[in-house]
Image 1 (cartoon, one colour):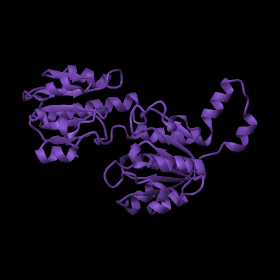
Image 2 (cartoon, one colour):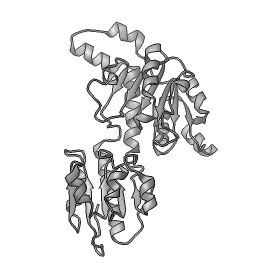
Image 3 (cartoon, one colour):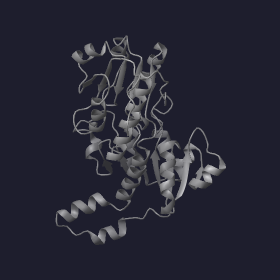
Length: 326
């Protein structure tokens, strides 16, 4: 991808990026920008002092920007999130100030959808147990013959039929599952037929599904959306997958549901604190498959995110209106 740097306004730009390979593509593009971009790999007092003069900020979810911090950035005019999520920002406060906030809404939807199918199959086929047992010299073939299951024929519930939810539904078609979904906005009949998905209420989604995967954004209405009351109505033995945000699921209710058998297993890619404390009971729970918030992190997805985010920054620098404003 090539960028046209002509007619770009001079603006002070900074980027908050985690150290390491995660945002390497983003760093490489930033280094080719027509104006200097200040790169920061930690958010401390010294960094905040530098950010006071910044007009454009490239932000990632690894650095929560509270109102207290944002108030010190008086010259800020545009925040480009190099991610789909933007709950690490006080967006309402930024809007009050007239600061534009954009995200990259669909660059990793394919990766997340593939991840959900991967962990679903891992749980159904008891892959983690099979791998560990075989590596330890324990042959559990007979046990797995009666405890491993197929995905075909299961009822798969999708909570949130946005970009990621639709990608997941599309990929579930060859598995011959019954796809159910709940969303505040129902798809039209043609879309439902194309995806092979049936609309149900939130309670029905949990009552009828063998697997439920969460794909709603975190906001006031979705915080603790999956709680004890909802889980008490779930089909016994439900598998719950969360690659959205940890706060959508009430942690105590999740653990209780795993203990009493309402949930047979869970796959979690997101946590209230990241990385989670090593003593967090979720990490040690035998019925929870844990991954390091990497559902949307593939080489291909990170490349798409980097290019789309920086193209939007250039658009702003050239006097245009940034796309994907939240």
